[in-house]
Length: 193
Image (cartoon, rainbow, N blue to C red; front, side, top):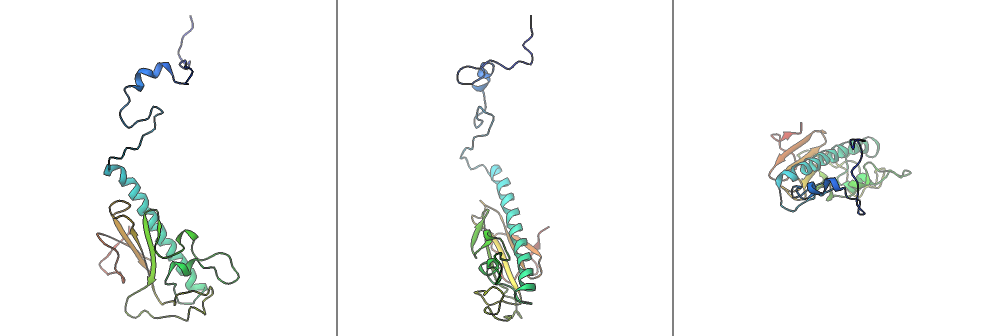
């Protein structure tokens, strides 16, 4: 006699394996017979944490992109000046088709991966206007300034993220919980590690 070891179980006309029929009726709730989880709307915080961590990582990435874009803008567009809106960072310089930042961060208040991202003039004392918007390499709409402020707030606090992030001309990323990042960033604010 030949052994059945290594042979696939027989299938019926619907493609279901007979050998597994008794197992399918005992599958825990929330598991699809194909082995995939079925999302149940129970508001389980444990399921939100990985998504929030991903959103927070994306927010940090957005602020890093802003820092890089601002460095390029200050070096190539308005020497010593920084854009005060995302709208001005996405505008390409005259003669180019590519802006300083990617189009997914094209306007102040854009929501990206559960975070609302904004750039503004740094409200610290001593921040000055630099050159003029008309003299910028990309006809910026906003008046360039000697320092900028950027922030990323959870679109749904406690749902899309729990941390609030900020950055400025120093290029350091800061974080806090409970409320939006103040402009200017207070010296006691924790640095993102």
